[in-house]
Length: 312
Length: 244
Image 1 (cartoon, rainbow over the protein chains, first blue to last red):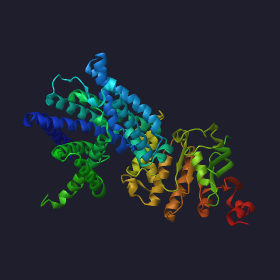
Image 2 (tube, each protein chain N blue to C red):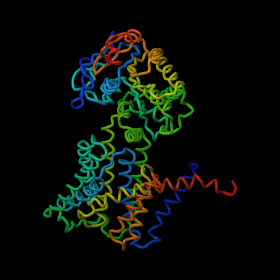
Image 3 (tube, rainbow over the protein chains, first blue to last red):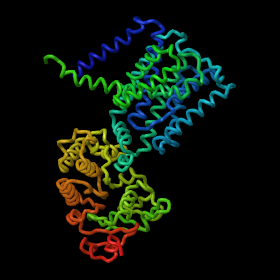
Image 4 (cartoon, each protein chain N blue to C red):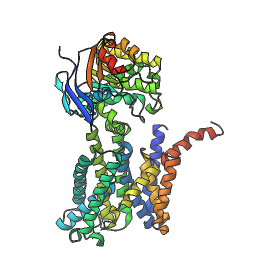
């Protein structure tokens, strides 16, 4: 596709997204907003697991850290919300750096287990510290725009998702992206070719933690009530499902996957927890039959299109 | 003249197995040295120690006068040591050209990068050198075993400045035509850029064309050194290969 054509499609898509709040109900806009929250989480995890090959199971925890840090700071010290969110992002970066330093010399399943243990520890800590976090009772947070109506938050998350997406694309297209892909494909070969594998894995870990904390921080001040429930493993599983179904290691994969799974999840809301079983089956089908996910499927279909065209 | 590579009392054990046992080896500037020995004699472990993938239990590794046994692999690469693996380890989801560019991109991180046009020209030149230019845009995972070996060699040549090339069984399972390309490539880099090489191999005809001297390992130690003809007649070598 030529650049002007691509630009045209991008402008058209952008206009369609901006127009959404006029065409849909508040409920639908809320769902779209939550989808965009997941888009940010999925982009971050895809950068870490898809491009760098580091299978962390603590991604959702960084979103929770961002949300709780901001909410607690705003509540206890009275700092402006944006400063609270900023502090949450900084804390996530610092914790990500520390956790990365501890865990990123581990391989595969050990890294997954260590990050999962960290995630559960943080969740349990928040759950049991009633005096400070109110645990399962939930912690009230002030609304960023002073209203629970979803439209301004939809635009906010649209902007955030766009910014995070462009940042991730920039990273993947840069030399850092090449280091990460080399590390994922063969860490030993990357190291003997001069790549400081540990440093760049940690950089990817911190960046993905920052993305998650940005999403979590803003989402906390949209939902208005924090609880440790979204820090359960279910949430991490949802992010993994979104990326795998959308297309691991592709740029549009996590975006398409997050929107698709979140919308599907809403459609199947009446099914309760059975949804997770359906999603698990979906992942099995995708991994077995379409490893490239929805993006891979679309690319295959597009490649076949000219053969079906009756004339050129 | 300072040797390019020197090991003194180098040792590595895995549990109760001593893989390398007090190895002392010296490779001079501009030399292409063969490293031979029966299976399990510690040759690959030695290469892994020299490239930093394994940490030595004892002993010293000196590359161009600098101790490297405590350095990490990327720090050793930064000192001009490149290597290839017996089973080619390419970045499968990257193109052949991208694979070859990785050492040059890694140099940017160290602040020792070269101008991009120069890097691209050298990558193209090296791919031409190893006959892979037509496949530069192919994914590395689509290459045959021999082509993958050639891509590995081109990639190692991109480490700049390359002082020492470590090659682990470059001829294993490779077609004779590709073997000839490998030999020609190494000889040319040695002739034109003065690259020193340590080549682990079991393939004597190829080593005869490539190396003036070989070192023989057995049970983790050096048992003989000299030309192929000299070591072929050495009693300890015959005993190591054939048994008593």
